[in-house]
Image (cartoon, rainbow, N blue to C red; front, side):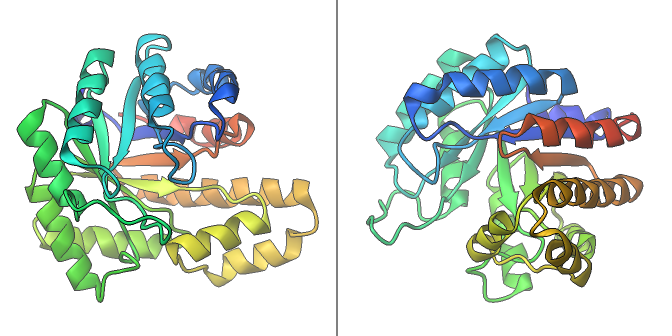
Length: 287
């Protein structure tokens, strides 16, 4: 099933997981999926390896299992910066054979130690290529606070419009901690004529190191309320975990009240946190 069709009926809840760094440990992810299955997510997305590594075979294996073994729609991430056209064609064939109908088309992060291939400079190039060579539902990434490489929010929206016009069927945002950025972004997208469903990406933060890494990677801004919480509980792991869950729940409740198309929860492969959040918001996820 194309995940873009689910938005016609309800507020969507989706989850994201990542393959283990070592393929020998892949069994761990299936224990995680068994616990997440009870949350009845509308779909689960699987990142491309860990930290940009070349474990794409694990991505395909897990995405196939989600769809065929667990009966949940799956999305496979596909970053293109280090792939050529033949490699992408082979991956598309693998997705097709596995019954995976949904692809999150990404440029991917630039690795200074690796020279990028030149077939796909932007995610929009990959989107066009997939549309020409397969019958897939294509999901794109978007950035409420603007992409870190974009000179302005206007320029960021202009490039997003190009990606949508190339054939992107729905969007998932990068994580954010201040909902006002999402609402401003949604308004900019609407003015630009971007009319596909936009899911809000939410990451519950459970320790200080995690948020420091996210800020370094993504450049997201931290509201005063969030910083105060982190400073108060950073030396109490259990309190920090519970406060992070509560903060994410507050974000989600507000987003649903404001008519968000869906919530995409970055689980970090932690079923406990995902289940706590689901318990708090499940009654809000109505048609």
